[in-house]
Amino acid sequence: MIIDIIVLSSLGLALIFLLAWGMHSELRARIEKPKYLFQQQVNNFEKHNQQLTEASGSQKVNKVKDQRE
Image 1: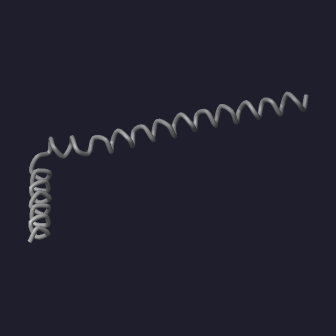
Image 2: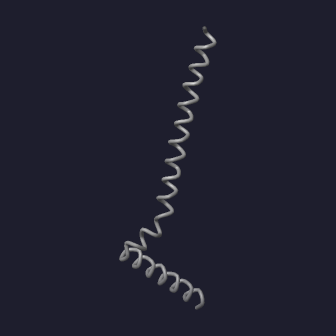
């Protein structure tokens, strides 16, 4: 009996949440905002890392050229 109450209340709350998420775009944007912030941070990290890699790569090339001379 208690298990039925727990399951039914969980399903009810999930249904209420899905309806609210589907009907209110502001709520959907608020819920999904962390996902987009994280993706932006990953993109910024990769861009910064690529710039550092390119900069260190050009320094290595210049260092090799200096050693040859």
